[in-house]
Length: 445
Image (cartoon, rainbow, N blue to C red; front, side, top):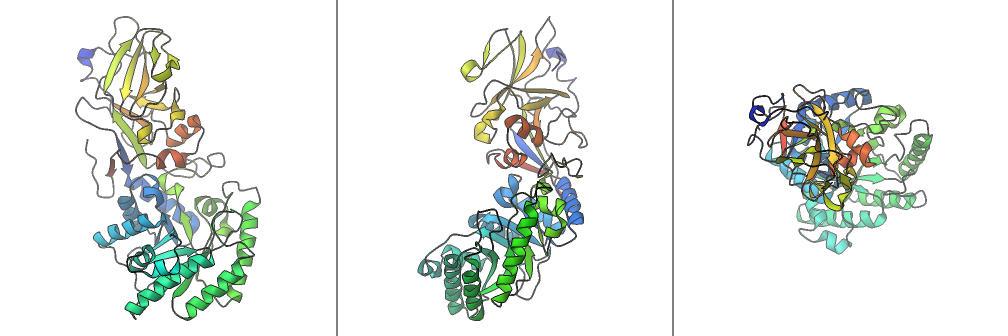
């Protein structure tokens, strides 16, 4: 931190903007800027030009499921998407509690009554799926749209739907999206299996057990605009659509593009796009275009108060294993965040941190519950450059109003840790409180 110091007696009165005194922030927290989220949603929606789904899986990429989902609906999302069934059911409960209407069978998706898509429902034996209270029965009662990749999945869902309709003749069939494998080699029906799946889906639809709403897939290399991969995916998708239509099905919602596709592959936008990482202010590939170049703003700021500042002599080992030694007498600060909170251990002696307008970094290994940062040389009789209670910002938006200009971004953390921005924000642990501001929320320290 360049050796900038101040005496302990004047520390409280001379804290820079964005700092806090002892006791003003008692815990680490992730501050979620919902206005930045809404801004990003508008940027992506304008680029897409078609209806869009807000992907809020994994607790909205670590940002907080409920506030993010509601903000995206206010910003115009007509669909919400999650991976796991438990999270989809939780989201439905949240929306019901917030008074967000469920669409009727005749309603198209809209922000005031959005559709919810879940793509990792469990595969059950048909008799288990049909049992009262089974996960698939709960999914149907929650009016979820569900992805189907195999005939076994289809059979389970059709059994659950038939049992539900036997108890309630007015109940609609299960709403399904047939997923095709266009080259990701993950979920989805491969070319050889798709005809049988399409014929079985037509049969289930004819008896009212299902309604085939969508046809969809994932792009594996949308963040590489010149690779040719997306064009291959799109060609396979078109061929799959022909197979499905030849079986007598007419899915009205075709979706293929996530953030990378909607930004860099216009032909992949089809009827619906799935906005994910871009909503949270991160680029799918900064080598193609950074978040700033895309006009996106970071949504999460991770911060914590320093719990201790101390002077340590030269040559002293810091943290487990002694992998970093103080090169001179140093001022060190302690931050109450560690790998139990989701900080990567790869941030050892690397993770950037801002304190009081200056950039520093983690020194030594990341511990379970805390990390040590270097506050600069302790030369002469000058006092410490920071004090317990001052706010350390690990990542956020350095351009936000009132932000510490030395703040690193989540992408910078990803780069020093050898990973991607998705992982940095998504792995943040549940014991770090999410505090929302903007969109009617007020920040409190």
